[in-house]
Length: 549
Image (cartoon, rainbow, N blue to C red; front, top):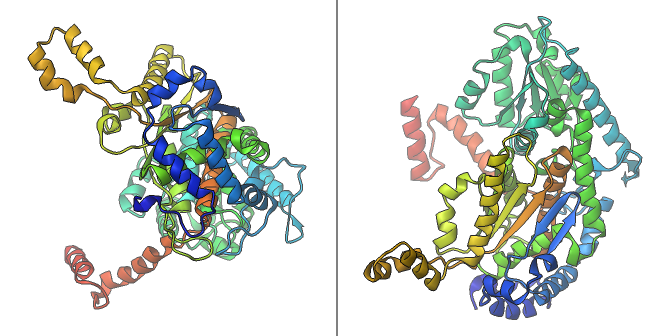
């Protein structure tokens, strides 16, 4: 038995029949599964919260789903789901609740944490976001020289950057004319140099997003932006051009920001789950508070589905089970996200953090080393560009890489011919990956082209496509604030479900901390040159950097 298929000691007994069944499923041909069941599309598709999932192009049968959902129930998925929504402290290593779902509850809902109704606090912050964003959008919030704000620069990193950047790009067609959004995260000075180039301090608003207001990369960029602004403005003008998403009022005030323009969020909101909070301020500025509320409503609709639908018809659960199936039983080490929508170009990058930071763990919730693989590598880019880059590997490479195709049926532009071609490519790729091209089909094609028998024989091995490559297809009527909210929430819940199956805590990220600590030490050593504590490679690299400075 391959090592990656061995069950963890924490896996319930329901894992064993899945091992046996997987041995059979790995021999199945997807093309044959469709030939055997002409209603397979209807049997393996589900609709919820404005999204449609076709998962029929997977190596599954009804018995597969039965075994997978049996495992999910044995892992107490439903109980753990309910514990998350109710505010129990499921982030065990940090002793915190996990309540990003509370951020999209209806205004009249009630949810108590430590005997306090947090929904009223959430709505109070949301109201402040709405008031502020409308002042900027309507031009009543002005710069120090009475200029209307035309450019907004969000300074953050990780979830404080990826969430706002992805959603603002996705909502491009809903963004107010004359308002340009920029995102600054990289500590590389080339990033801030490129971002500030062409901006006017008189009409630029900065959002500094850091809960502690001490995040090194964010604060380095924030102080650089502050110095840039002060080349034209004065310190007394800072409150008109800088606002904060933070909870550290003292540090915010010391920076020169009016604490009346500090928008807080809470410890029970993880960074990669925080776009629904004040971290989403750039999105509210871009599309307006009413559409931002539609974004929240779309996510809440997916929350409701996730809470209420049986596992066998539950979209986040099914998406998670498909990914678990291939990671655990087929040895797939990566998963491709292929949005066939230009405005979702940043969605694969967003999911990289969401999935890999959440479930990229080798330790179980009870501190034991996992004997099973956890999160795969998440990667991808927009179609149809990817078809001319890496799809060759998907079709004829040696690795089996599951794919999520994502598309909108209606475009937000008038170029209908391009949209038809886009959808044709999306659907064709999933079919081609599933069907492949047999030896007989390749031979027939080459004969039709008039090739000689000798040339056909030479080219035949190169013209055969094995097929049998799995994929999911997610469709929405159109990309709107509501469907975007549902889409993001869908993948959040997928991550949660897989964390339950692997018995890991999806809501901490201790692995991020070590590099930060070492970077702080090396920063000092780039000045002092004292490298005795390092290996020869690191010491040599520091020395070369010092010599170049």
